[in-house]
Length: 439
Ligand code: GDP
Image (cartoon, rainbow, N blue to C red):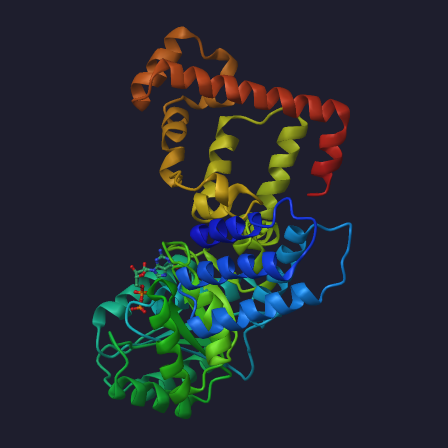
């Protein structure tokens, strides 16, 4: 996400390297580079100009501070400006009414159904009871897709495949929600490939009939400037409450994230960064600005970890580490937990400086496959007590997993080192202190 933009901005700031102070001339050339970088990232031209004019004005208006270099100062100003551009503060989803109704709108393929499933899972994790409603009356496959997602996240899906009236389906769903005491209903609607009157009429009728507390517009961020135009068309007709940007994990250049708020004047509320049900984050303008400027987003990383991590499992694990009993079964489970958090490259991109270091490197869930294969080829006894793995056993494990002896040796060595480290930490008491936080 935003790899190219981050690199270009960094280059822009480098033009100020070695400069003792901000001058009309050096700021002008840096700002020109920033504007170019934004336009290349598909930011609307007018928006890019407004932002960079503001940056220039603020930079020149600053009192000269000797403790801060012009480069640092400009990064700070750009950070503030990008945060402001994306809305300044994070806005939460509006959940009101009994049941509260959330209407999901957008073009076909934008990621509406996937997002509906993710949102259901997100709200369920907050302890709320949710009902998903399939209101796509044109594509039976969309109903099945929602049912699969519902099953995956453990949320009931209401559908009436034979009913061809979206408003009637939604009203029946509302009644059903009351009988099963569901507090929130999420209505997934039909989309078209392009904005068309019939679709707009239908979704507008749904909105009028349901009076939802939240109407979210879902848009594919990879469509760049088009995303902004589509958002405008939907907003003119629907007056939605917030935007959901999807596919920010792909090759999206990020322009939509940066321009939509300013052009449509509606907040971005969520970003979706993958096909996994956990790959959904609430949108925070300041964190996103920090990511764009290559400063990472550790806060979101920790939040994602907390979501994926089972607390009981964490306690069980900390006990095992304290007793020096951490084994290959635990290791395998850790890998599963990490995979649940989402795309690896995306996660690593949240660590400061890592996004840049990872450019061009392909890391995905398959990167764990060799390790998993080796561990799965071990017997239970071997996993619990790796010390018994002798030459013969190594041979068998290598054969069974289709990996080389060298790879088996490497994993055993790394695991032994890890256990040694845990032991040392336990002896020093530091580990105990850190781990006791989990208890
Ligand atoms: P809908 O027609 O608007 O309901 O769109 P879908 O939910 O069916 O999504 C269209 C395609 O985009 C599917 O293949 C999804 O798996 C994929 N998709 C949805 N959200 C994301 C995302 O955040 N990242 C990526 N990489 N793919 C996504």
